[in-house]
Image (tube, rainbow over the protein chains, first blue to last red):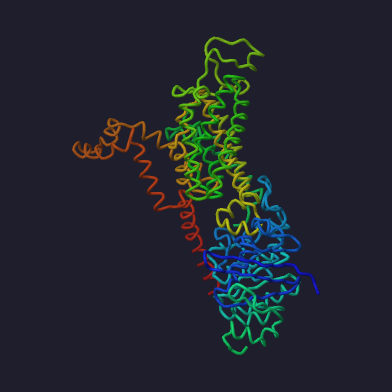
Length: 253
Length: 379
């Protein structure tokens, strides 16, 4: 069995009286694409927020690459190697597309804080080349000087993905990367995800679109009412009656 | 939106330096070519350029920067009293003390953002202002203000010469700090200050500050610890304010608490917004316009207005003077307020936005003939 890169153990999280996550266990293997599916309100986004330090769980542990992640600041978690694509794109709307991608590249190179006020940004050729390379890969190369805030929603999503990819994270978390996308863009994203998969980057992906999930995932976990009810390969999940009952409403996949 | 190259930056610097250093000549016909006012341009220019590093780049609106200005002035005067009338140690000390002060206030205020940050800085500045009048009187000399006295020690000066008759004046290794030499001294410091600000704007550090302004959440999840970035920007802008305060004291070795009042903090906010927040040149333009008009309008009175409108029939002139008189002299702030409102409503990006719009208008006009020529060529 290969290496477990992310391990969520016994995590509980309540908002007031509402139990968002109860007794959550999840293990993500290195190099795999691990999809999390589940009905609305199952706690999928809450789970990701716990992983990146946005929310502190009430109890339980999150271990990434052998390190305990609980209580760490968001920037420490990112520096440890976790990048996240949000459900609504979080980009730097006031900056150009190229700058948007250069900033995460600089974070990877310079760490959480570096005071270099006399260095010229135009001399950062390596960071510049990294950014251009990723933008080329993701198909935004003809828009590098565009104001990021003025882009279409689909392009913003791809830009955010580029911002994460340029960091070469050990673990990439994607929160519904194709939500609100047209069929054409969805297919493009699937192709892109498959290409990234070949590079061996571990990914946890939350997705509603079953077409996307079954095209890219190596492993699927089903989350319902804050806990994992089933976990396995796509074929196993497809045939699991418990999953069909709880989530797919008996519909045949 | 590519990062400008060093070459282009140096070119801008060269033009900026030329414009600043020739100010006495081209401001002469405008009636502003005298050293006192020129010095004011340079000093407030430094203040605003520094303030813009915080407000323009990070978007954190501080309402307390006058406190650093005041601290700079007091430190400079103390340096004149205790050590020497040479301005160099005074300036260095002021910048350091203001920076230290900014580090403390910034450390606490930056725990909050948005309006809460503004209120915290305002509270600190007002606290400093009131302390200067009350508890800290031994240091600030309260309402009278801190002044030079014949009994001052001036340890370093005493090493080289005996105390002369009367109060000594500030010098830079023999160069008098009044008149044109005083202006050129401030102008050179302004050019250096502008150069540093330009480097910050175009450095990785500067672009990260802009990214914090744009989306701080994303910055955190991108692996940046945003607090030290913000604190650095705060301290740098505090040091600029300290430098401006020190220069005020070098031209007139007197420091009073009114320099720390919130109105003084508000003025620099006004200047920055009027010129264009987050642009390199904008704050400088804002300073120029506000200080120039302050100079002209506040000196006017009803008689002067009567002279201006003398070409009108008497009855009309009386009406016009009656309408305009509240806007001049003491009432000049009314003009400033009206000007500020017009700019914020019609040009939220300040004068720099206006310039950009005019540029676009012209480039469109010049593009058209080219387009036509191409059309002709193809047809």
